[in-house]
Image (cartoon, rainbow, N blue to C red):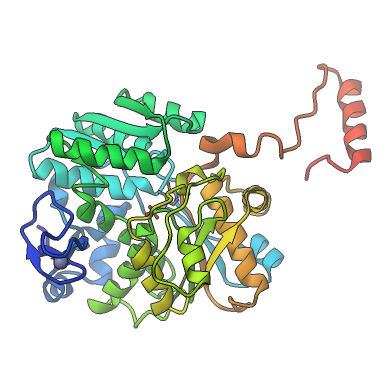
Amino acid sequence: MSFVTALRCRECHREYALAATHVCEFCFGPLEVAYDYDAIRRAVSRVSIERGPASMWRYAPFLPCDAENRVDLGAGFTPLVRADNLGRRLGLRQLWIKNDTMNPTWSFKDRVVEVAATRARELGYDTLACASTGNLANSVAAHAAHAGMRAFVFIPSDLEAGKVIGSAVYHPTLVAVDGSYDDVNRLCAELGDRYPWAFVNINVRPYYAEGSKTLGYEVAEQLGWQAPDHCVVPMASGSLFTKIHKGLKELHQVGLIEEPLTRMHGAQAAGCAPIATAWSEGSFNFRPVKPRTIARSLAIGNPADGYYALRTLADTAGAAAAVSDEEVVEGMLLLAETEGIFAETAGGVVVAALRRLAEAGRIGPDETTVAFVTGAGLKTQEAVTDAVVQPLHVRATVPSFEEALAVREAAGTAGR
Ligand SMILES: *Cc1c(COP(=O)(O)O)cnc(C)c1O
Ligand SMILES: [Zn+2]
């Protein structure tokens, strides 16, 4: 049972049937799912949610598909980890990490794909497809395998090895395209007109995007049914960023939390920062860029939701940060060494942005802050290969070990 009423244009508010379509025919605005919030309010309570499955599907009444027939590998309800060690380094006493590396294919994309795959099947599709910066490819391939659907997965040809293998292993038709993500996306938009496939982030994008709201719901529930003061979120297309905020607002709308006063902060890599750049210029019109950064999962030069991300930044008095690739690597190592969480490059972007915001006094020491770590580090090993201390290499004798350790200790690189 779903509480969806229509697809609605974000600009002119015209309504459309609940089909596989994503653009308004009148004004070319993006379509978004509309709900009957009064009915949701009557149907859910904190207790009913808490009794639900330990996955994102505990929030099924807020999703645009029927949970009975869901494609479910167990995405969501990931740990919200208290980060006191990292907090001490940054001067923050109420810091939390939402650890979304702990998803079935090790990124938050499993949330959006479970909704998109479920809705695609409801709409009669037997083939899933996507244009991906890497993590989406992994998730679409895995969920198609689980659901017994065909999969066409398009990626830029120069992705990290972990992301290529992390798709190929599920045996989709994996297509490596010469060009950037924006080239891949353009190709997929054309293919979408020719083939009867559900492109999760193109023709079924309105449904797909709703999956990201579950991150907002979970964080509020895990904080004891309250919204945090600050969220720090990585931005690629900007969809995740806007939907976390939408999730918090919806919880208030149906009476589950107080009105959220959360400041939404967006993190990008300097080598691909169209949203952060527009923000720093005080503009709502970003200029597309040609990405050049190790944060490949965020390398979208022409972000589909860039305008709405800028609106969310403005509406919540947030801030956007663009961090260098060196800071990304430092951020990955800092998170790993302080909290035991190995994030991919996007996580490094978030930690680096968090550090900037804390140092600039944008986040107060006692304000509740959640940093969203959205993908796992084993997929982007290239980024830290040269930055980590190599293992002590020894023969299987005690003297060999002690000799090698002494050398390391003298050099001050022995590890904790
Ligand atoms: C895709 C992705 C994002 C951002 O997604 P958008 O919704 O396009 O902004 C963030 N982190 C990781 C690890 C991703 O794969
Ligand atoms: Zn419109």
